Amino acid sequence: MYLPKQFNFPEHARNIIRENPFASLISNDDQGFPFVTHIPIKLIPHASDPKQDTLLGHVAKGNPHTSFLRSRPFVLLTFMGPQAYMSPAVYPDLVRVPTWSYVAVHVKAEVRILEGEEAKDAILKQLIADHEPPYARQWRGLPESYTQPMLNAIVAFEMKVQDIQTKVKLNQHRPESHAAMHAAYEAGNESEKALALWMRRLGMAA
Image (spheres, rainbow, N blue to C red):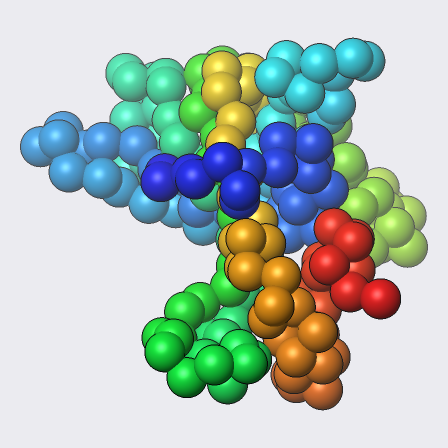
């Protein structure tokens, strides 16, 4: 993606992925056109280097994406964080234009298909632990006559990170707008409030 240096914040990639785990998984189809599947992702951090992190996911076996992953294992994942319009009213002068604030991560990764029910079950349990821990007991208690067909109906995979781009676009290079911008976002909707929090994280608001 287009990534001017003032918006490049690689140190925040993991937090953005954890807070916004519903990703767009992008491959090329057999005609060379991008094919997109929207799926939840589990991040497994490397001990020291985010560029060696692992991502876990799964798709339905009937999804054409499964064949693309097997034949073309390099993929792009995009994670979209909070986003909102920004009015030029935040500037002290009138010779300005509107823009859009947003937080996003793009990850290039290599896919490895995980075979077997045990591997699939392990991924599902990690996703359950992230999003609804109490459901784990219910899942474990379901009969095999139900869980085995469910596991058979998905294709699970891990993705080794090859490259990460992290963009936090909050008008960092226009400090004269920050006070009014933060006040406007703080008084706005859920996404705007989340951007106000990001401004505080970056030291852009008192």
